Every structure is written in C-alpha cells, then in structure tokens.
Image 1 (cartoon, rainbow, N blue to C red):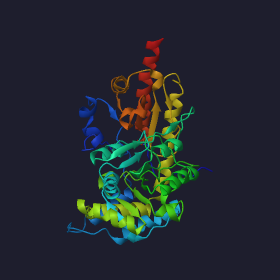
Image 2 (cartoon, rainbow, N blue to C red):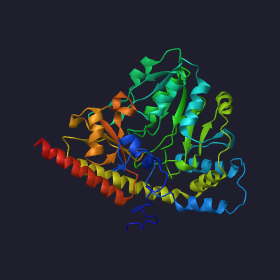
Image 3 (cartoon, rainbow, N blue to C red):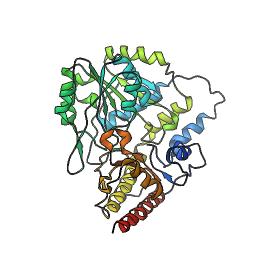
Image 4 (spheres, rainbow, N blue to C red):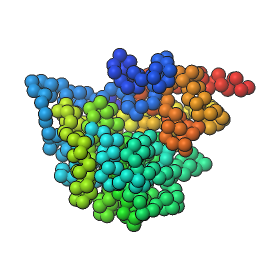
Length: 400
C-alpha cells in the first residue's frame, strides 16, 4: 500500500511580488521579464512550516539584539549529521558562517598565499574559480571526465600531473554542482591519498549532501578515515535542503587543531560574527523537525527530474539530460543543437521563455550545456515542460 504523503508540493507561493533574486534580476540578466527564471539554486518551493513557525515564535520576544549561536542549534546539526551521514562532530569543531562561498574565501586565505595553486574540478559552480582569482591565487583546473553515457568522473591522472610544490588547496564539490554526481567512497579515497601525500588541504563543499537520490549515498570527505580529518574543512548547512538561503546561516567543520588555528586567523579578519537570532531558531528547527519533509521533497524533486528526462527523449537529436544522483539542478547537454553558446542561451530566453544558467559560466568545459533548476512546484514544472516542448517542436519543424 502506497504511503500517504504529508506535504504538498503541487503549488507554491508566488515570488514575483517579492525581492527574490531570480525574479528581480530577470531584466538585467536576460534582457526581459517575460520568462520563468530557472537559474539560481534556490527553490520555488515554500520553506517548510516548522521553520517559519519557529521564526514566528521567536518574534514574540520584544528584543532583537546581538545573540550568540545557541549551543542547541549546533547540537541539532551534529545529531542530523550523525543520523543521516554517520559522521560525528563535536561542538568545538563548528564555526558559524553566513554562506559557503564566504567560508571558501576564508579557507583560501587561511591555507594558501598569493600565487599558490588551488585545484578546481570543472565544470563547477563559478565562485570556485572566481574566488581563487579574486584572492590572487592560481587556478589549477583538473577537468572532470565525460563518458559516452553522459556521466562524469575524476581524472586522477590529470589531477596528479597538475600538482607541484605550490599546490596547497583542493576545492571539492561533493555532491557536484552542476553535474549532479555523488562521489563514491573509492573515488574520494583516491583523491584523499594524493592530497595526503602532497599535504594539500581539502575544502569540501557539501551543501547539497542531503539532496541525494537512492540508491546513492553521500560520503562526507572527512569521514573517509582518521587521516582525512587532518586535512579537511567541511562546509554544510540548511540553505539548499530546506530552501533557507535567505536566512544566511551555514557552518564550517574543522576537526584538526592546526587547521582550526589557521582558519581562525582568516575568519577573525572578516568578522563573521554570529548571524541573526531569527536564523538561529530557523536553523535549529530545520534540523530537529525536517526529516520527513526532506524525504518527501526528494520524491517530488525526482519526479520533476523524470518529467524532464521523459520529455527530452522526444528530441534526442538536440539534447540529453545528464544522469543525476543529487541536487535539483539538471545539466543539459545541448551540443546536438549545434549552436554557439550565446545563441543557445538566446534560444531558451526567446523561444522557450526560460532563464537558465549558461553552461559556459561553469568554465569552458560547460560549453554547449545549460543548467536548469527543477526545484519547483508540480504546476510550475508542467509549465516548464510545456514551454520547452513548444520551443523544441518549433525548432524540429524549422529544420525539417
């Protein structure tokens, strides 16, 4: 007997009347407001009620002054990580951060000097290489391999060949954005062995780790073995999982004392402080009450992904959807359309009236690809499919 679902993802609140980034920036990014924005990685799905109710309760207090992150909030995250990812942290290993990108920049400052090499595995979330360049470090590209079936993997031979005495840091995206890979233990262990040998610190962005589809399983990099803890800085949080980016609260986990000391120097320079009192209660409530919501969300997201895949099979000469193991970001291979990148982007804007991320923004390895955020309500997903189908049907007719 099929289980009755508690949460309804069929509809969602209209964000066009809010200051939502993806809507406000339509004109600036795409030259028109007449499109559905499916680019930036937040969800057009309502933030869960147990999070919002915790905030409402906190607002009953008449004072909104400075507050420390309550121990209970970090303990809720620790309990979640232990239960969901079989990984144990202690409270003195956690730092508050307002974003993963801010944490990454602090790590670059902490573990490298100007001119040192930082490895990024492209195509990848653009701040990975932009942050390195802005901080005057050297970007070392270790491009992922692309198999004939559309799946991606590490290029270990290339990884080894790029390392020299000035290579100090690896920015690992796990699960990977935009290609949707959940790295297997043996893949991560190969990376770990090389980094241990060359004394390379690993900044592991694991912000999508709760949005993994069965039978895949996320393996925190620091959990590989005891030695992994000595070189790993882990970034985790509620922003992607519960659609809480607007609360600007995540955390950084560092289990090695010497890494902690170096990180704190860079961390204190920027004055991260302790965030918002509303964020504290939202963060805690998400981790304490969110298990059932996340499980049902993943069922909904994967259904949206399958709709996209099923639709794409009507146009195999034009596009292929990269097999996904995690995230709500579809990496679409459009090379069959034989369009230049600027024309590919224009096609989706003008013909499909959809605002996607251009694959080229994820580095040159993304040329010919587009990224589509399918974390939307069922109603919106049907509209996305409708727009795509109309655009591709027209293109097919035009070519015939």
